[in-house]
Image 1 (tube, rainbow, N blue to C red):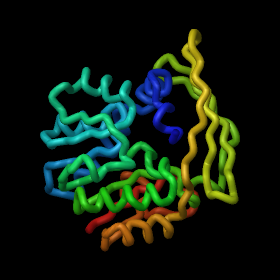
Image 2: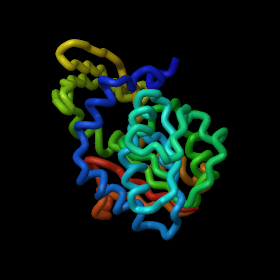
Image 3: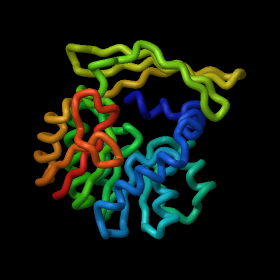
Image 4: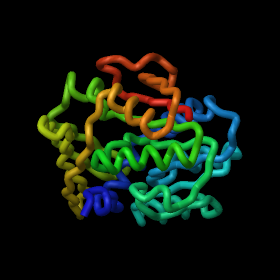
Length: 235
């Protein structure tokens, strides 16, 4: 079983829902929507729907896809009229979504194995002529200062993350512990680490012809030490 099929339970999702301020969501959507005049958006994976709901509030037609039943149920309670679909982005092509803009935000790229990631990018290229990927596990972001342990609290949930890097496979292994004082969830996240150059080549292979690499929503250039990579790919 792929790790992410069982990782995103209510404890993990509650933490992430509380960890991201609304201002960050607004800034990310400002960045993405400033790239296109199109009004149809695919959000995959959409998590608990923070980006999809922000987009819908601005009048966009949105399809949100996520494997977490808890996340989709939460999103439906907040915005029941949106097109929410529970399913695995590893089979994105089977959903038959057509959009003007595809989003893969929230550091969700790299969950699949290499062949799965290549297929996912091809499916995104088929679905939309414009793609924005938010990727905090690019090698240039992660490896210069890989933190060993991170402790945070959000949404009434305490989180401890212990990071290790598997050099042979190019994977970041994160041992998570989530606790709300009564329940504890321990899970391991596996995320594949690519350089910006590797991701660019994968996007071109998938069918995109123009790739821009940014280090943040202000549009600054991506460089070694940037905290995140925002890749904008046009078909």
